[in-house]
Amino acid sequence: MTWLDLADDTPFGLDNLPYGVFSAGGAPERRIGVPVGDHVLDLTAAAAGTAAAFAPLLTGGVLNPLLAAGPATWRDVRASVTEWLTERRYADQLRPHLVPLAEVTTHLAFDVADYVDFYSSEHHALNAGKIFRPDATELPPNWKHLPIGYHGRAGTVVASGTPVVRPHGQRKPRAADAPSFGPSQRLDIEAEVGFVVGVPSAPGTRVSTADFADHVFGVCLVNDWSARDIQAWEYQPLGPFLGKSFATSVSPWIVPLAALEHARVDGPTQDPEPFEYLRTGEKWGLELAMEVRLNGHLVSSPPFATQYWTAPQQLAHMTINGASLRTGDLFASGTVTGPERDQRGSFLELSWGGREPFELPGGVTRTFLEDGDEVVISATAPGPGGTRIGFGDVRGTVVAG
Ligand code: MN
Image (tube, rainbow, N blue to C red; front, top):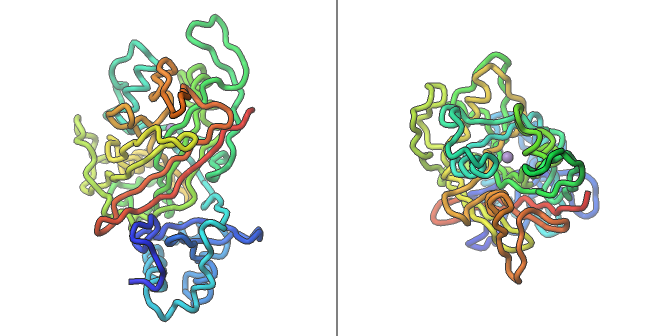
């Protein structure tokens, strides 16, 4: 068991042990932390205090050295943290390194190298197609042959809690004769799941689906803020650009793949059968239950297990041309949308392109985001014995641009 006083239903139990970066007590120093119950274990201090061999990897206030160290070290660190929090002989030594979760400030946990965003929910792709291109009733012809994606802007991936300034740009409503310029009038969210690469790959090599867990460290939540009016005017023929690149928010805690063993499920049946390099013998669908809240009200519950393309397939596709991976690469799933109306992962879909406002309590309606709106995306996954693994949340408030 554990010498900690943990609630049975805590999202941060000993089977989770995600990693993040925090500061506390008004001190600017950033430390690596592991949330457990309603505290954060100061892993930087705990590793130094126990003279752990991996302690030097945890001193820089950023996860990248740990990410780069690879799966054997990831297992060592996780086993050590589990041992420290389980065996009573460590209690006196570690208690001073437990900081109340309510008193910490979390930061971006890793230096983001490259950022790629996919488009792997069939329900989202069908909805977006119908909304953006009213004549289109089917998926694009390539959609079931490859995981469609684009390269995003790594430098504007921001920590949860960072205010999102409404972007300005060009937009041209379908009925307008000419484009106009100004603040986006169709600012939106995309509820997504992000995968954090630890171990790099050499240029010219390919990373197979089977090697997924040798390279990918863990999973976080992503809000891919999107200005639909800017996006709609600029995206053809080269894809998303300024409608996406102003901000992408990520959750503070990176859940290691090892914590998700009980969440792994088969992905949907793929027809047509994909090329050999996209096939996988392992289950890497993930049964994450996501929730999207606007100003505190639940507006959507996207089921991640409905994604058509899984993360190992995305990783294999991303590198099939020989493009290398770097430590800190982030690739996101694409908007997660299920088959039901209340499972849509964007306001674009919830309001059907702005044509069908959706209701909030108190007679309030929304199509797209208004200044002052706060969006919080959270998720849990099955853990052992009926427990839940918590991802924490990614939050952001829109401010006038
Ligand atoms: Mn996206």
